[in-house]
Image (cartoon, rainbow, N blue to C red):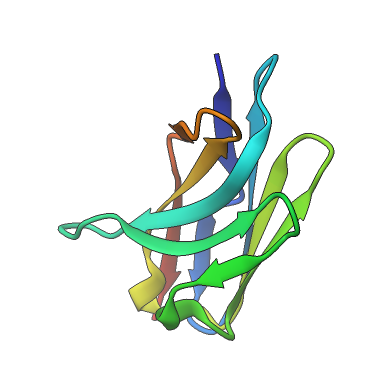
Length: 118
């Protein structure tokens, strides 16, 4: 059983910053990649950023390039999402996805709410 838990969401003013964290745990879990998606009210879930565990390469969606940064802590299978220059359009529930090495199975967290006020 793999558990994915996000933290760090909250309310911030436009132009502010937040740092999200996500940890994936499981007796035999080894990540292939971990990343972030988000879903705004009335919209579909969309990709934000991801990091491959081997090598640490990163990929970002165009709308967060230069503002968001994903990083990791190998111990504890943890990723962080540093979000800067936030705008009301970034308001959404942010979900962490952990993909297991070998089986390539995806595990999702329950999400953390980020609200940016204008």
